Image (cartoon, rainbow, N blue to C red; front, side, top):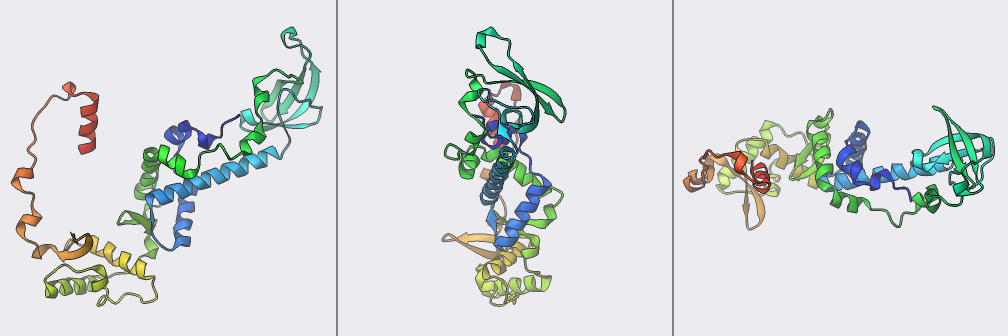
Length: 295
């Protein structure tokens, strides 16, 4: 059985690279969702789109002619699809007798392709390509799902996807908030006046406040999705150096850095790293990997 490209490790580890069409797909996905999606959700959706496109291409190519198998007979003028040649389609322009006694009686067909002519065996019962054909590629039972592919090649897929979202030509269209991605246009326009109100509220209360508490006075567009209102304010606060996100009893709150105790703002002396010279050539592969992960 021929293996689909998306079912191979080579494709995801060495060939996968997020293209402009992929970014457009993710943009429309977020636009339709009207909410944030995690990197894993974006990646899985993109993999599913790759699988769908591959399926459509295979079905389209197989419909253009008879699938080549060495055991089959072909006639002059017949269109033949060659799955092993990336579903290239050719036309049979000649048929002759084969001349190899080891295989007994068989035929040789001459096929015209766009780039030239080639010859192939036909009416040949003993051949490994007879064990499967292009139609077998439509059997989805043995195929890896998008979730399974992502679990196997998560690191490589994430690297390519993150680069496109953070540094690609359209990186300005996307925003990451709390480990989820959304379109920049989906965020509410929060000017400095709103942030000043949030600052005053925290200062008056003299304690960290939840985003929902701040929204009672920060009058954002009431027609906006409540989730997006929260995300918009969180994003604006996280990009303003006056505010610091803290956690209390597992709950995320906002406080002012200038009101925090000095020990909170600085690293304790016992935890401060003082570089010590060392010879990297003496490190094992495992230690070099740990060094890279900590850097």
